[in-house]
Length: 165
Image: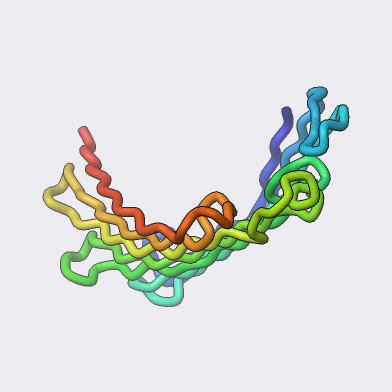
């Protein structure tokens, strides 16, 4: 298995001049059986990520990815969002993001009736409770979970507690 990422980063991630652009890829030389039951001896994909501070408080990001659709369920992915720092306290971060994953045509042909894609919208807020402790509730709305037409859309609640010591 090989993975490589290269990119350019400018500025301090906490500053208003921050920009990051990176491209990466992965390649697996292992033998495996693909989604149609065919023997394969390689697999791979590529991705692009970009992040930019609009101001010292507002940042944007975008992610694009693709993998060999004849060997993987997910043929394409796109994600984007924003982070707003200091809404209540200086260290707090409010985030809003969208993630969209698409089944490849080969997977849909083999698996039968599956939805084309799954899309998730997430709203999260990381609040600093102290210098060493933060809490991050999250609310997600998942459209076409698992890309299974028999499964209703879902609401997912999450809670993360981060302790730094």
